[in-house]
Length: 114
Image 1 (tube, rainbow, N blue to C red):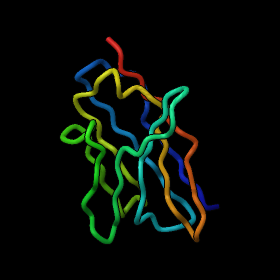
Image 2 (spheres, rainbow, N blue to C red):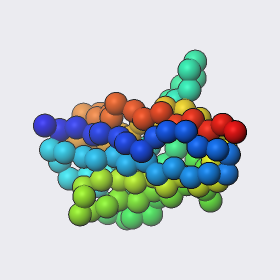
Image 3 (cartoon, one colour):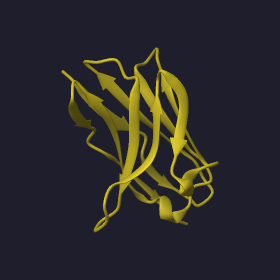
Image 4 (cartoon, rainbow, N blue to C red):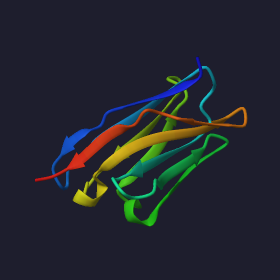
């Protein structure tokens, strides 16, 4: 079955860290992105990476704080989120384009609060 499954969300304090994972099945995960969404707002691209050129790109608000990498052995992508801020609170989704089809995970909630 072709799918993406996120994990690792939760509650963190400002300045804290969380690590999100996106496990792929049914295909090799090479190119992928993380998005986030808060109620009433459009989904926002947070970070993306291509396995062919393993250098991630980040939206300005997370540069220097988030790190995206692909774990080839686990066929998964990890988003390390450090120095979290309350404005990072959102539902986080991983995304990949597979066989000309948009594939989304179910999402994992991140909440940053004192």
